[in-house]
Amino acid sequence: MPAPSNLDNLRVVLVSARNPLNIGAAARALSNFGFPHLRVVNPYHVAFRKAVSAVGATEVMRDAQEYATLPEAIADCTLVVGTTAVRDRKLHQPFRRLEVGARLIHKRLQASPVALVFGSEKFGLSNDDLSYCHWLIRIPTVDANISMNLGQAVAVCLYELIRDGKAPGTVINEKLSPARMADIDRITQLLLTALDKSGYIKAGTEAPTQEKVRRRVRRLKLPADSVEVARKIDLRHVCYHSPMAAQPSRGHFITFEGLDGCGKSTQLEKLAVVLRKEGLPFLITREPGGTASGEVIRNLLLDSATSGLSPFTELALMFASRTQHIKEIIEPALSEGKIILCDRFTDSTEAYQGGGRKLGSQPVLSLHRILCGGLQPDVTILMDSDVAASVERARRRNRSRAVNSPDESNENRFEQESRTFFGRVHSAYLKIAARDKKRVFLVDARGTPNQTHAKIVEIVRRKLDLSKP
Image (cartoon, rainbow, N blue to C red):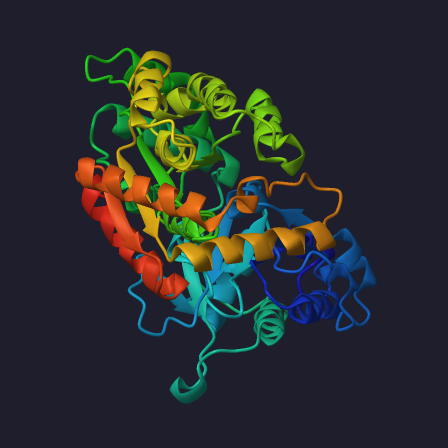
């Protein structure tokens, strides 16, 4: 069995584990074999420390460290080994059978920290997670039942490390002190910055390029002294003073419009999940609101207690919130190259105040031109739904909110309007879509949420030229 000091160098990392009982079983395996360090990345259940399956592993569970991301969890390690059942996946990293990998891990444990990384029970490690690994190991299970329970997989891997600790195997050159993962990540980020500034990374290819660069830097097996040399070179200084240096490309502005209760907030969140999976920088915001002053105005506009506001007062407050929102949130985010997902914008004002309140489109468009500089979204998703059904759904939502969250602000002022009012709003929205067909995409929201989501993703990909994952 390896010496205690060597056991202390292993970090077992569980990424997005869904079942707290599996985390407890993994902790029990660590305790059984004398490995003290468990690290948990973004666990599905925050109360995992109370798992009854962690029999005899009180200290391991108590000392388990939580991290928001995998790079943070492996920052102090010089070797990162992922686990995978392989299946039909196309792997970019070398992989070894467990008994071979265990020898290599044991050898590295003599000198420095090693991370052994396990993915979620349902999905395993993502391609992004795998890009942080130097190589992968696979437990040789039968093809008919290839996937193991998470706790069992941890136990088998740790047993192999203990059992085969003194077995002969491939010798790794440890004369040079290996670089820590935090330092390797720092070099990787500098390289990505240089590639971006040189124009090598094209819009929509950021995520796969980052994975590729991470894999290739890890294959270099950089020693610690090479990291010091890279620090002194400072690639940021080189690329920012290079003739190739360029400003970040401007981001994209996407707005969601429609009647209250049409499902636009749900669809906005679903699109955010897609952007997050593809590694695209984005920001979610809303109107009225989005800023500290904007949220104060939102409460004033939407609270049923302020039903006496005149239509022109509503219009003025909407644009007061919007101009601050553009200055404080929208323009800076666009300058940084982010994709903005905004719940409502000026189209809502034209539909609700211009159409619903009968102020007409001209006052709204004139104020937008003067106060907002004519800023227009790149894409507007207009959720087209049945008026009666949408209004009833919005009213039902607010009644539920009033019962379940009585301390929250009351935002049902507009929902109290008549069906005739919402009919005018709906007609105004359709006129906007007919007037600006290149920007406004009318999406039938009467289907299932997933059907609507698929339509929206296809529109956004086509309009903004985003690559598929």
